[in-house]
Structures are given as C-alpha cells and as structure tokens.
Amino acid sequence: MPKIEPSGRETTFAEDDIIVSKTDVYGKITYANDVFLKVAGYTEEEIIGAPHSIIRHPDMPRCVFQLAWSRIQSGKEIFAYVMNMAKNGDHYWVFAHLTPTFGPGGEITGYHSNRRVPDRAPVAKVAEIYATLLAEEKKHDSKEEAMAAAGAILTSVLASLGTSYDELMFALASGGDHG
Image 1 (cartoon, rainbow, N blue to C red):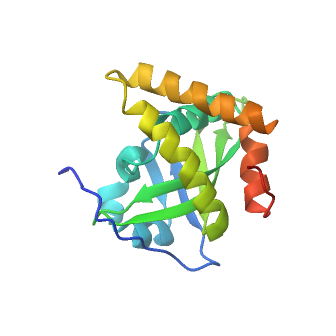
Image 2: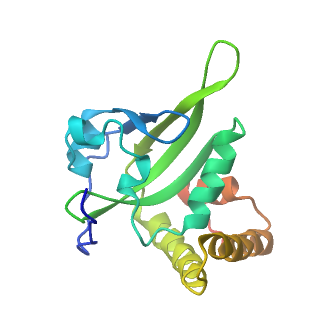
C-alpha cells in the first residue's frame, strides 16, 4: 500500500455513530464496522488483515500508542483521544476505548476498540500535549529513544497535574480543567 500523506483536512462523523474495530493479538484488523470503513475510507477487503496502524496519523506521538499497547497487553482497558488518518489523508479525532478480548481460559485473544466523536474543547487541550510529545520524539533518531523521552515528558506532565492518564482523559471529556 502506498504511503499516505496528511491532507491537512479534518473530517468528522455523526455524534451518535460509533467506530468499532477488532484486532488479533498482533494488531491486525479482524473486524471493522461500516462506520469505520466510511470514516477511514477503506473497503473491508483493504482493511481486514491490515495492521491497525494503517490509520495512524504521523502527528500522533508514538509514546501514546506505546502506553495504550502496554495497558491492553497487560489485560487492562484504556481511554484516549486519538487523531487518526483516513485513506485520503484527512484526519479525524476520536475518543477511543480500547480493551483486551479474553478467551475462555482468560488469555488475551485480541483487542477491541470503540471510538466516538470527541468534544472539541478537550481535543484542543490534548492536541497541545500531543504536540509537545511529538516535538520531543522528533529530536531522537531511534523510535525507542523517542518514545522513552516523550513518555518521560508525559509522566512529568501528569505528575505536575497530580493525575493519571486516564483521569486526565476523563476530566477533559467531562469538561474538567487540568491545566
């Protein structure tokens, strides 16, 4: 698949729509609902079996995805604001709920994500934090060093606010002010 460049245009979806996708334990898409396909601009044939990172926008800090993966791989859920990128390069913000899927023996068999339209005020605040993290990541040549350095900044920001990542996301979602 050719590399997609960001268009700089934002797209949205209906407030009552929910984007749903499922992946295997390796992050390969096993299910995408019609809303996902419409917003992301992919066909089911293009998306099934593709890595979920196919919709990763380059302006999203890798350390946020590292946090999300770490959380769901440990069997916990996470909520996060995420900017994704459609097939045509347009971006769209979501408030995502990512959860592990468990098999009958309690083992993780995949992951599930529901994404809703976020309120605009929290997106602006989150975008500022993410821009700071991304700027730090761009200072480093290795992805590992970049994620570690940006992750340290995120940890510092959260500590200065006296909150956790989840608490910050929910405070912003509910209109609470954390800085």
